[in-house]
Length: 283
Image (tube, rainbow, N blue to C red):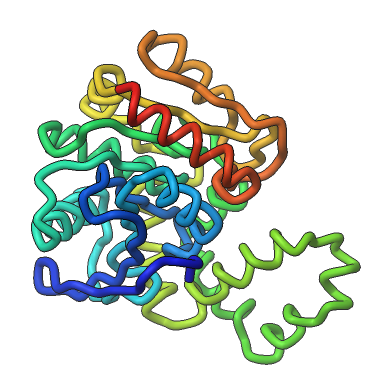
């Protein structure tokens, strides 16, 4: 959990949704939406700096993820949008700025296309939904054989092997890589977690690539105030997606950090918080 944040839970739409909150209660509400095989801890380095900017920061574990309930279901974008609306109702938030990382970005845009009056502005962080290309590993995870392969890879003996420091050194993993992989292991460590992951993934990714950029989402993305934050060397979702969108929508702002990786909000947390707070103040 992030330093200075409080772990809370609320019942929304009949399900328990877990979330972290920090910052002044009367601050501008900023809802953080994480990506696939992840949870609200992906924002652990950014929550404190964002709260220090005077924002009311709310980072939730999406339905089917983290400490939130994991009911059986299809986990389509429409399901996440409905759950998000119910979560906002439970917190008595008529509207907020939505900040989505990766898969969370697609949820933010889909929700906004259905409920534009509830979205003040959007921050997309290395987000899905702006183009077709995506990392081959995620495309492979959409194949029918992927669940069986993951179950085999998550056997207890292999999970013990994955934790060995010698293997980490041999693979050249950084501490940040290890933190991300441990978060993914938590997400995929149970049968319910695996089921929600594959259902969520197949709703937005096919073996041929992303399939989330509907006409309604594109139209919403081109009329809402939007900040796009990417690392220059993102190996999962290309920077070109953000550049193409920024060129189409002149009011959008694109910020590119000179780094590799898919989590600019962790690698450059302080600058990320400054950019987000400045964007909210200016728009």
